[in-house]
Image (tube, rainbow, N blue to C red; front, side, top):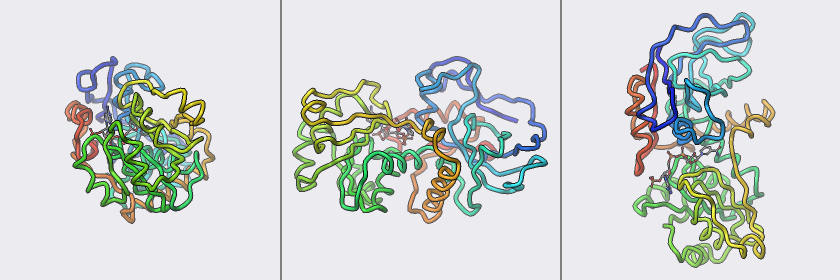
Length: 327
Ligand SMILES: NC(=O)c1ccc[n+]([C@@H]2O[C@H](COP(=O)([O-])OP(=O)(O)OC[C@H]3O[C@@H](n4cnc5c(N)ncnc54)[C@H](OP(=O)(O)O)[C@@H]3O)[C@@H](O)[C@H]2O)c1
């Protein structure tokens, strides 16, 4: 079978390869053998290959933060899964044709949902959901502000916020994205400009904004901070600019803004299994009803992993890059 692997940290398309390894044997009693149907390339995967992720991989390393799979064979004592079931593995190393997973690391999913959309269920929808639910108590009619708003996470935030009646100010790098984002529920789409605070004040009728969600970092936080209410929370979950966050003393002392970070991995480690199951089934039902959906730019076979990671690392994409290891 084929897998994607990298043997040194570096430029993703230079260090990653698709290689042949021995086929997997039968699963043990408590294990499940799955065919991987689809897996997205996430910015976290790219950071991982570059050696800049929160956990450094042991080389040579397989990768792939997420996928969706179809059960091929179950171990003798597995009760919750059968051949043909559609499943979400909670572990990593998903850019492979087949994998064996302990049944406690699998979530059973409905079998009538587009596998390409489902392949992105584990990371980005859960990130958007938890960031909206777990940090600031938001009521219908409240405002939030976010940057990188056209990213997949940004689009899930727009859609989930809309469902809850929460209004969104969305910062993008390309103004031509405004209509597309408004169509999926964005209230306002703006550019990062020096007069962002006065623009936002006017758009929201001077409403308090208690939550900012940031994937960019760097000096944009100076301008976002000026849009926020006293004691508001800035939730940083990405490092797209590659720069450290900047804030003024006025923002930290007199406005008492709270800067904190979000990382999905520790959340999944500390949540109860039942809560994880309920969250993913809720999000899967929203994907099934197309209330959650992100555009796809291109799908690649695993053999073209070099081209796929190179494509994923380009900006101004119209959607995600997906690998379909079994065609
Ligand atoms: N902390 C966590 O647990 C967690 C979980 C999921 C995702 N993330 C992070 O969330 C972010 C978005 O992920 P995704 O999968 O949604 O991304 P994606 O769909 O691949 O989109 C990438 C986005 O990044 C924007 N971008 C790239 N460089 C930028 C820069 N220097 N300044 C501003 N914007 C920039 C792009 O804008 P253009 O379209 O204009 O190029 C695009 O909107 C990533 O940083 C990822 O690592 C974190």
